[in-house]
Amino acid sequence: MRILVADDDRDIARALYLRLAAAGFDVSVAHTGREALDLVTRCCPDLVILDIMMPDGNGFTVFDMLRTSRETGEIPVLFLTAHGNIPNWLYAMEHGASDVIQKPYDGTALVRTIRETLDRWYGPQTPRAA
Image (cartoon, rainbow, N blue to C red; front, side, top):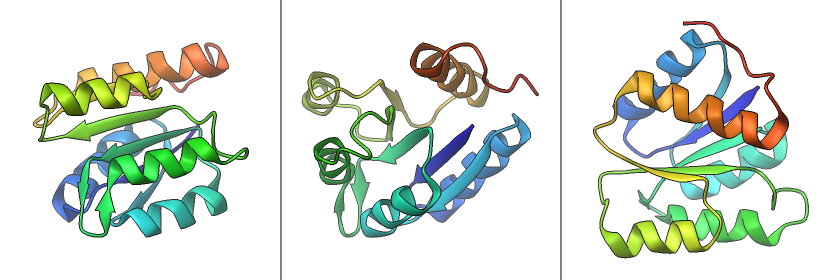
């Protein structure tokens, strides 16, 4: 299963890449909203993890653009954010996000959430490595 991680913090993006790759996922990384949108069309991810705050807009803008496209409208999206305030969480959930995960996050719990989300979307076929 392919996952796209979009986070402007390169250290966080790298940590996510390493953790998810170790768990058996094929991971692509974007550091801006524009880069995330470009990668979605090129790598066709099965799930997108979006940071809310990015330098060229925000994860909600990317999310809204994904949702309005026929090709990307059904891709599950998890928000990973340091800004876990109620309005952000409500906006994400009301507009169809799969979940909102607060930074700092627990790596094991994040992988479990990703697997559960992918299982709901595509059936129980996600990798079960560490």
